Length: 128
Image (cartoon, rainbow, N blue to C red):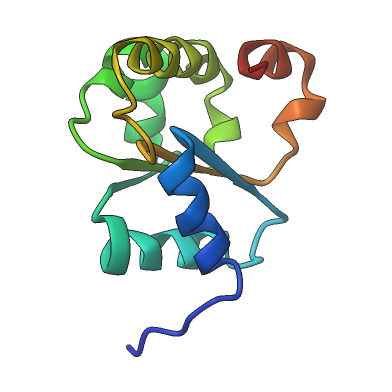
């Protein structure tokens, strides 16, 4: 399959160079997964996980902190709104990495079908 450049590809890549986490929101079937899979394959070679997979979702739900810390390099978490308890450990890990150095930029690429900032329990965890 040929690589088709998406118009959002460049802004996402630029954001990954500047921020530790980037969130792509959009309705189901809008191309988020295809976009992040292409970014994984052609640009940052991240691990790709989808929370549509029951085993992945269960592992993240059981111990979200250990789940996130198990990745050495960049990771894509697709449909992240399915595991809302992951956001507070995610924020904690990002904060720890910021205090240590500027490493960790582009560590997390997240996608979701809902506006996480509209969910009170999630927006509190993501402030900052």
